[in-house]
Amino acid sequence: MENKLLKYLECNKKYVINLISKLIEIPTINPPGENYEKIVDFLESECRKLKLVTRKYVTPKSVLDKYGVNGGSKRISLVADLNAGCKKILHINSHYDVVPASDNWKTDPFKAIVKGGRVYGRGSEDMKGNIASVLFALKALKDCGMNPKINIELSFTPDEEIGGRTGLGYLVEKGLVKADYAMSEGYSGHYISIGNKGVLWAEIEVIGKSAHGSMPHKGVNSFERMSMLVNELEKLKNKILKRKTRHNMREAISKSPSLVMGGFLEGGVKVNIVPGITKFSIDRRLIPEENISAAKKEIEAIIRKFNARYKDSKVNIRFVSQENPAISKKDSAFFKIASKAVKIITGKYANFSVMPGATDMRYFMQKGIPSIGYSASGGEKWHSDNEFVYIKSLVSTAKVYALIISQLS
Ligand SMILES: [Zn+2]
Image (tube, rainbow, N blue to C red; front, side, top):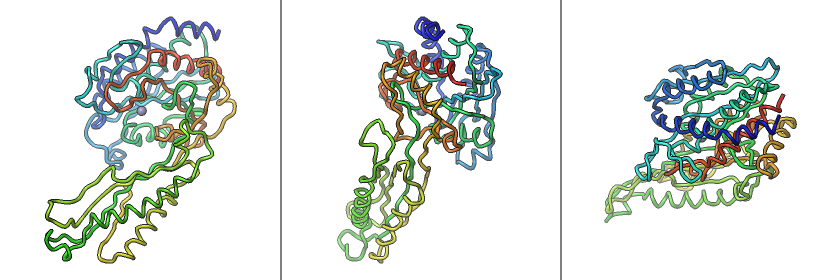
């Protein structure tokens, strides 16, 4: 039976190529979030062809307001159920929004180009290719006459690219989706993601006193103060770099937390003015063993000390985004089935790793639901020019999904 399924997927590639192409050609650019209704209608009709029962949810304005989401389409999520009459539910989530494309693409980013074993287009890898692979897997099961031993619930959600709180986050929060196990975007090949680092973003403002460039003694140079503060923060950076998570990471270097300063930088008006205000950002990533409140305290302590030492300047900090690290609850049966599927398809032993970047999977992980991230891949050029996905990966990812769906109960 297994072989029949894999053979079907190998012989019907056309379906997945055709489907991803159509998805790429609906430009669901976010921000601001365009064509959401159009893609949901399209996905709904595709799901119905597979005999799935669909429902739609619109994220209410109050939730959009709360997270500062405005403009663009209505925020619609599509949920599609395959009720196999079983007790448990495997939930498979995909986000359908994509980031904007620059003018530097060699081809039209919203026209799918199939060439050299790849499909090019914005969202091909992140993550419309995976939507196509998941539906391909379900089509294979249906056409091979196989009934899963678990109910399947698919969700197609907006706004992952702006944090997901108004997409999957809303559905999970309201209990509109149910899951005993969950799968979504993540690693590919023989890597399976089981968590992600936490994120803390801050904006720091250094206030000095502006003065004429010829009379610097009349001012307090906020830029020079900032550079002293940056030095202190560098010490913190060196300290946290020594920490290492006990979890697997695909790249050993990612086993440590990180701290990036100056991603955003502002200040200075003119060459002959002593700068009075300088601002810069901090992007702090947390390993699963850390937490947001402790990470905040470490930064705040440095600023407090700095302010106490330099009374003629003032440093203010504002945390603009924060998210604790997420790690999946272990479920040995689920993980074993996933790991076996990956071994059969890739020939390599599965490596369960934590990802440096956060995805919507964390909403399930935070609820204690065993969750894994696995998706079709290309050149790992998410968000960059000339994004693509390998057709081989679309097919092998569909195979992994099909094996998991057919074996999990
Ligand atoms: Zn994505």
